[in-house]
Length: 124
Image (cartoon, rainbow, N blue to C red):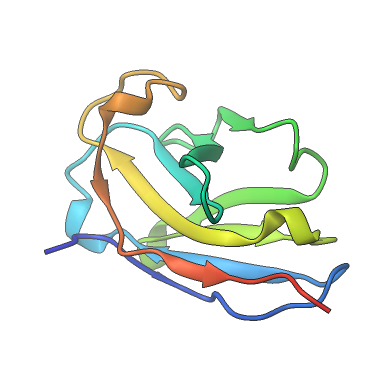
């Protein structure tokens, strides 16, 4: 059973915006990085954005730099991915993920808790 719960996905037109949310309240004891991944149809899952638990360090894939913003609200135990100027190639299933312990933002194998994913189709 997933410990993370994503929400906010849905059909959006190119150029539109969407904000994804991820409830991390069940994993507050995890001190590692938080991240958003996505998997497009017939492609491998890729890291979109990540941040340290403090939020002070962030990373973005080149394809989303300047358009997506990762953030968190500690009072709500929620992390977000604000997606602006969406493109058709942003289509995919988006997953939030958490590392149990700090292992580096790009340590893909260290993300050991995952949500169930939320669909983001970008289409006109």
